[in-house]
Length: 179
Image (cartoon, rainbow, N blue to C red; front, top):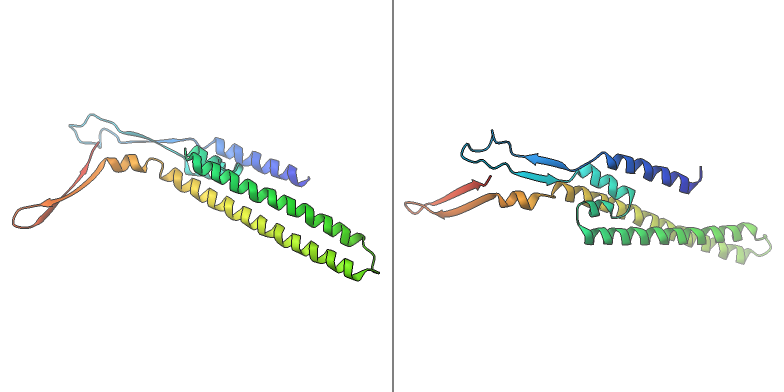
């Protein structure tokens, strides 16, 4: 199987796993809540594993899933740029390798120069390859953490902490939870 065919099947595999991870709902059960409170708080959260797999399958998809559109565009742009540069350098490296292999031994300076060019483009290809891998890893980690913290602000609005002066020159505090 050729290289693009393997990549297609890897993306298909990741896409199938990403489809099985849906948003979860957190509920505060009324039995646990105070008896005078009739409210039930429902938060929609995102699946961290779904965000991670989406981020692996397509650049920026995990951030888009978490509704972080600027990050999604940035992740897509950076990953696509590094992948494109890696492919360009790979083609240049192959061209110089073919020229090096086709040259005869009677022109050692030219053959040496072609070999140096081959090594130069190979190093650049490896640099872009590692940059792509690092960018994908950072994007995966970012999507995973953002999915965990998706409803963090909404939950923090319910929690209150106050410090106020109490009796006899003492400080008192109050911790409240709004349901």
